[in-house]
Image 1 (cartoon, rainbow over the protein chains, first blue to last red):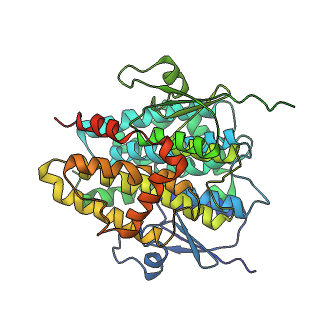
Image 2 (cartoon, rainbow over the protein chains, first blue to last red):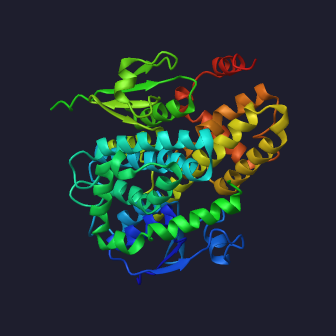
Length: 221
Length: 218
């Protein structure tokens, strides 16, 4: 049966980037469709494929939708299991990978969002929590080249999209990532040498310009 | 030849649905375990060293090695003990089950919890959101006995709060959230869920749960 893969995404979204890196890592031919999250007229395709959340990313495989970025990665890993495994095979290692991906998904995202969408005490709180998260992740990475070991894994794919937002966090949070967590920067640059990541991550300046626009739209400052 | 001695321990809190998910999963697989009730106002060394990141229950300690986060633990249990699988074999249906577990966790639980504990001011809006969340689950369960089909699966385990806690808590709050007239299919599912022979042994006693949460209302 022919494999038809369509990916609905939004270019600056870390969630969309995760799905894209996963399909690229597996070498899956796919069609990418851009959905502007700020255009409240969602496309009919998106509304049909994700009626519960009406959000990207959505992976559409032979007409059937899979939603939620981390679930999309696991699906891709299970279907295209002949190369580039993203999750380990041992149940304990898989649990660890899922734990840390969940940590990135909830804790890191939440703290980071406070840095650039709020001000004053709330922003400072977000920055403190974000840096603490980075240090925990540095500890978890240890001496390994990637969270997945010798190659990109589930946690790498979940986390590396945040790199494209680092300039946003640095400028609004007034701190330097390289100074606070040099190993995370080194890890991110190592990931960027992979074609799947380099192709997917947008330029940090482009993301920063968008963040300024969003802040104006949200009425922050 | 004797089977390898498995050491399974759960650090939990009996009124917590998250903690209960883990016990449900173990009981459904027929795995013996030791349970240790935790005092979250005075966290044990064991809890702090097993879950240094979040310092929360539940934690599963399997042969001395800890795993945290209730749904991560439930999938670990499913992958380690392969009888009575919680997830179907086909990747698309597995993704669907994971999706609905996440909907329960991210959308339904917070909406229901908020509606129950909200003060008068935000009550109307909170109840509206809770009803929307229940409607989503009503549409999803359809005519199936369980979200997992004929047997309890990942989504049913994730939705234990909806299946058991909501009925007790809505009484305390004086609300009618999961009512059979409004959500007949989901209500029917909740009855199937809490009367399932294994599940009913794993759920905390109704009167004690009622008393525990009632004492939290000022």
